[in-house]
Image (spheres, rainbow, N blue to C red):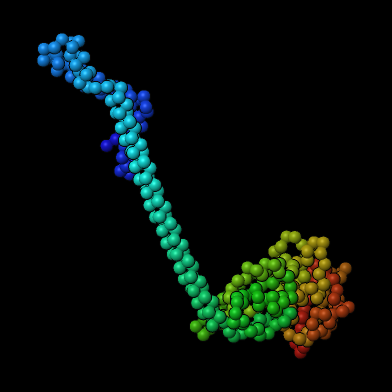
Length: 317
């Protein structure tokens, strides 16, 4: 099979001859027949000249025969061209019909699939709404601690709870506790350094969840190298220890209370001692307070090596 032959869909062979080629073929055909008749007359005993005259006489008017043959050849060529054109139109219509059918089928299938997806999404939303109920508790460093109802419609994430409760600090640590197999466990924990970072808290809230917000230390711990000394904290405070005084910065007693997580009890006796010029410690602050804002005059700037003690009422100093 000739691989270079074009695919013609079974159509009749197209007659590509021009008028000159058709006339040349007719001339060749007529010449052949006249020569054949001339040979027959010669074989019958006639001379070459008489045989040629008799052959032409037998054949008739050559120009008329030639014109008639040309007309027949042209009519056949035109007929073939028309047949090819009609068959090509039929093929194109068939291809167009199949294409339309495929488009309609694909469109129908797409719409059916979209309907199925929409139904599944509706079922998912209905199931979510049916299961969304109850309350969540938020405690700690927020402006509005307490119980918050979980909406039945729409998402209610950990970020939404924090927005409702209002964190007290720009930087804080949030912990999400959830009951698993009857026991409350830590389900999620994140540290937020800026309020806009709350957008990443996408955990969905369920009934019975508890959220605890704790402030992050405002000052570097003792191993920090960017400081000018340390303040030491003991007693009735959530996070006792050493807190770095940042170079070029200021820290007061109320700021230290906040950085250390807040008071464990109320009221407390606040005592600040400091080395004097002779190397002995002297009392700088000695106040009884319920909260950091009660310090007033006792809210002094802290120096390196200051020692701050928070004693609950009734505890030995």
